Amino acid sequence: MLSAGACAGSGLCGCPRQSGRRAGSTRGVDEAVALLRHALTLRPDHPEAHNNLGNALKAQGHLAAAVACFRQALHLRPDYDEAQYNLGNVLRAQGDLEAAVDCFRQALVLRPDFADAHVNLGNTLAEQRRLDEAMACYRHAIALQPDQPDAHFNLGIVLLTCGDLMAGWREYEWRWRMPHMRAACRDMSKPQWYGEAAEGRTLLIHAEQGFGDTLQFCRYVRLAAERGLRVILQVPQPLVRLLRGVAGVELAGVELVVACGGDPPPFDLHCPMLSLPLVFGTTLATIPQGAAYLHADPRQVEGGRRGWAGCRVVPCAWAWCGPGTRVPIHPLWRRLIADAHWRPIGWRRCSMYPAWIGSACKRPGPHRRRSSG
Image 1 (cartoon, rainbow, N blue to C red):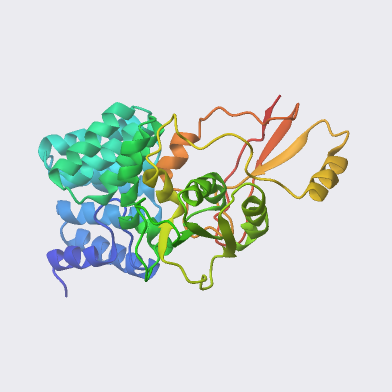
Image 2 (cartoon, rainbow, N blue to C red):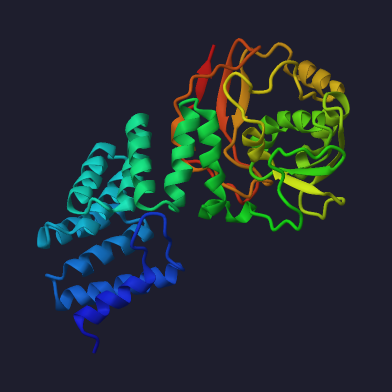
């Protein structure tokens, strides 16, 4: 028979100890829960077992039960910094942000060099739109662990939100070290372009995230072409037809638009599309703007106009991802933009509906229809 300590230790193999880490499989988490429950029948006063059971239950989605485990661990060991941290993570997941802040702060009283606690305190403060405080937390974490990707990446998001684009895009380059970006990271045989002189050479600019990112940041392609580079644009297949129109009408110097998924034509340099703002030193005053750079097929525009003629309320759909999206929107981005004030242009009344495209996109939960007029 396994001892209580052995059961508690075995349970660690199947459950995450810190925010952002995932168990290897549902089966592994289930086994961890069983081992930890057995450990607690043998040693109900074992704080580590309560803490680890809380992590496993959180991985299963049983948040209330996880909270109870972490609180019991803290009852048994009031100075248990990791249990305070884990309790903060679950309270944050439940939406109790103020209580989560208190837990992270208490964890840092117990262990001031707890870099992950500084990061998740920053994340929680950012969700409360306490952005200056959040930035201070991320910078403290970076001072403790200079190679901490979460701290750099989340600092970048907050800096961009605050309008400090130069610093924000520099930190945003840490995205390639983030787990949610691994699917988009490509092993290129040619060097990345960082803005150096390269007139006459062929530059592959490739989409890296969702449709919306591609449509927003393709505006930078013109700037590369103006530097004398021959540009190949690689985008998700559903956008090829639209952006071929862009290349032909507005973006002189863009030689070819090709679909992601296949081998592109030969090129000398490459650049991920969301690195272009950093390459061009973008500030709020220098964001490329001016004439419209996306143009729908005039025949389809006319057909749509006839179809909606006489409608008093126009249904519009929004989606966080689609079949061409390999990277989900980061939770901190989602929360920071969720309360943005925007109004459809050109319609007197518009009803908004959440939408999903393809099996890879998680369907949203219950929602309220939003109308604006």
